[in-house]
Length: 218
Image (tube, rainbow, N blue to C red; front, side, top):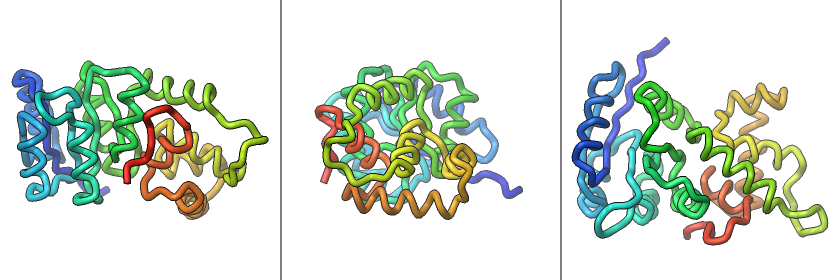
């Protein structure tokens, strides 16, 4: 098995938190910390040059928020995965972050081992989320799921695939859960993107759930 080689940048205005995260990443085998930034404005200028595989992004910072920073950076850095690392657990922040282009949403109280696993997961194509965050998303599906009478051209299988995406499943895990092949999962996801007129997993999840203030960013 090839060794993991993941470059990580950290954006957080809290100095002790930055220090802890930096130590965690630098002390983990297969990870490399390529940037540490104290606010979104500095990160906006520096991250395109650092080209990290994964960015750990705080939300509430002086000046520009982490969500707005991701919204501006994602079109410039399509291959970089952004994971929000925050204290906020409310649906409004969650879906604004996902619709901005974030691929993961973890809470700051997440233990070291779990956070490193989340970085690996998002790097491998997953959407890691703290368990109670994933639960809130599932509850939102149940609360806002459109009725069959509403116009919707997603097939039942595509709905199943999209719900598993929202719960943070990797493509391989979706294939196993639905007893289909990974190429078939890829085909379903491509069709979902086409039908929902989106370009990413996070945009598809945000649009499908119909959460207020979760409009897909252009």
